[in-house]
Each structure stands twice: as C-alpha cells, then as structure tokens.
Amino acid sequence: MPTTESPRGKAIAEAAARVIPGGVNSSTRYIGAPYAFVDAAGAYVTDADGRRYLDYHAAFGAILLGHNAPAVNDAVRAAIGGVDLIGLGVTEPEVALAEKVVEVIPSAESMVATMSGSEAVAQAIRLARAVTGRDLIVKFQGGFHGWSDSVARNVISTPERAYGLDPLSAGILPHALDATLIAEFNDLPSVEALFDQYPERIAAVIMEPIPHNVGALVPTQDFVDGLRKLTEQQGALYILDEVITGFRHSLGGYQQVMGVTPDLTTFGKGMGNGFPTGGVAGRRDLMEHFNGQTGDVLMAGTFNGNPIGCAAALATIGYLQEHPDFYERTHRLGARMRAGLNGIIAELDIEATVAGFGGVFSLYFAKPPVLGYRDLLRNDNTAYVAFHRGMTERGFLMLPLALKRNHVSGAHTEEDIDRTLEAARDVLRDLR
Ligand SMILES: Cc1ncc(COP(=O)(O)O)c(C=O)c1O
Image (cartoon, rainbow, N blue to C red; front, side, top):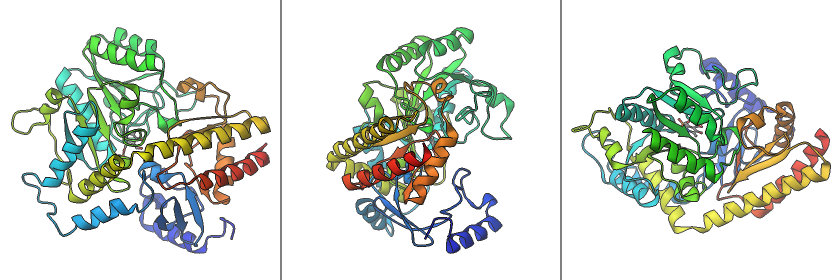
C-alpha cells in the first residue's frame, strides 16, 4: 500500500486535529503520511495502517538502545509498585542515578534530575547567571537547547535571519531574546568578539558539542580547547548541552571524546531510552547553589527524580556500561552508512556530502566542507525534503527537517544499513 493511502492513520490524525492544536504534541512532529503509529520494536516502528519503517528518527534521538529495549522496559516494570513519587526527602533510585552520572561523566561532581532537556538547560542558565552575577548568554547559530525563553532563537534560520534576531516563537520577552548573543560554530574569534563587545557581562557560553540540530557540525579540537580557555579567562561558565551527544557518542559523553571539562553539562533524550528524564551535572561548588538549605538558586519540579525516569536512566546507563560493544557497533554501522552514502553521491555526481559522528549521520545537499552554520546556508533544503519523502515511501523514517540528523541505534544491523543504502541510491538517482 503506498504511504499516501492511510485510512486508519488519517482517521486518527483527523481526530487528533479536533482536540490537539495541529494534531501533534510537539510542533515539528507533523509530516503528513505516515500520520500515526501503533507499535515499535528494536529498529522498527509500525504505522496505524500496518506499514513497517526502519527508524533512524529515533524519537528525535530519545531512543538509544532501540525501541522497547528489554533491559530498560524490565527495569521500569520492576519500579512500578515499589516506592513511587513521594515528593519529600529522597529515594534510593535518585541517589543511585546521581552516583551513576558522577561515575561515568568526567566533569560531573554532583547532579540534579529533571524531566526533560529543556528543563535542564533552563536550570543551568539560571545557575550561570546566579553564580556570575552577569546577564548575557552566548549560543551558536544552529544550536538548539529546548523551548525556554533564553535559548529559543536562531536554530535553522534563513539566510536573511541567520545571526540576526530569529526567535523560534512569538511571546518571548524581547529582553530575554536580547540577552542571548549569537556566535558562529567552529569560529573562536566570533566568540572573542562578543566578550570584547560586552566585557564582564557574559555569564555562560552554551553549546551542543556537535550541533546535531543542524546535522553534524563536528568541532575542531582547537575550537573546543579555545572556548574552554576563553570562558575561564573571562570568568564565564562553559555549558555543554549533551542532550543528544550524552551517552550516545560515548559513555562519558562527547566531553570524554574531546577531553574537555565543562563547568556544567545538561542531559536528556537517550539517557532514559524513551522515558522522560534529564539532568544537570557539574562542578560541586556551582551545583551547591541548588542546595535548598544553603544555596540561592531554585531547583524545583514535582516530577524531578521520579521513579520511572530514574529506573529508565539507570537501566540505560547500566546497559551501556555492561555492553561497551554498543559503541563499537554503532560507530562501525554509522561509518558504514556515511561511507556508503558518500560513495553513492560520488557515483551519481550529486552536490551533497555526508557528515556525522558515531552512529549519527546527516545528508547535506551542499558541497563540503561543512564546519559552521555559514556553510549550511548553501544547503538545498528542497532536495532534502524530496529525499526524505522518497525514503519514507520506501519504508525508511528519517528526520523530517532539512538540517537535522539521523541515528543508528543499538538495534540496527549491518543488513539494515545496506538496505538503506540501496534505497538511498534509488531515491538519489531519481532526484538527480
Ligand atoms: C541539544 C538539545 N538540548 C535540549 C533539548 C530540549 O530537550 P527536551 O525536548 O527534552 O526538552 C533538545 C531537544 O531537541 C536538544 O536537541
């Protein structure tokens, strides 16, 4: 059945649109067909009309080990019926989770649990302002750090709006937007210029170690080391937003890959393999500001440290600790995908390139090199949309936005990669 024929999916989508604005619960989820999903297992998801898709979208990266990973689901089932949400004192799973994060993340001396990545980022930014007494934040064009006011600007900007004022939403206080400065990724002088322009005003530089929200801009070691040095010299905090890279690229996050020690790190997504969880971790002296008895920064959240999120995160991180081959495997399959796609691009002589790291791959319809957002302004978004549609029709789910990334999870096989490459060859040949 072609994807356009989706009687059951369409009916569910129509029912959704009557009671949910736009018919989806997060604004970038609507892609037309397939409209609705009913099942997921390993690397596959099934739509409401019974069509199976090989899934590289992975719930925007929240699925790390594969859908319905038994190790995680079993732990969540076991948690139900034990101590539930008390909301006073602490529970043992919360202590175990913080101990686990402190054990595996090189820069983590203590940790607080949140429900999502956006909450973790909002808390980290407030903490940075509190400890430095400064008002401004630096983020990079193309970086996404969730929906909170301080960071909801300048992600996939058009050439006209890039680097200028490009809020993701109406309703954000102009002051909040103005307090966030925009720099260029992999361009240290662009950050130095902001510190020169606003002396002793910048509280923190926040970055995705690899800005996966615009594909995969891989940082140079000099850029990362330079930022660490610069923020230290300038008395600003260096916040790594590892909501996507954390646990995915290595057990200790991308900070471990780069050998850099941020002041604060934020987590979410894959940490709980699809269950809601997240957190902020970092230097103890900074984190102590969250101490409700002696500190000065509010840390609040009814569901923070809830038993399901804790059980899921403990099981996911525990699985990764016990199965280090996860990294060997996802990195090998990711490399196979990137090399295969680059081979097809060369063979068909298309203006495109593939970027990525570990199990993540991104197809850019632009010439290499792709180091900063400026290079992405040349991306042919229309070509990507056509590629995405062609792959969906052949049963491969990828991220719907032109500059996002795709994920090889712990459940993908070599055969899955090879089948994907065959389909990609067909689609790219048609596109050409
Ligand atoms: C790097 C990064 N930080 C923060 C967030 C926000 O996380 P959440 O959607 O869990 O609030 C996202 C979500 O896409 C993200 O990619």
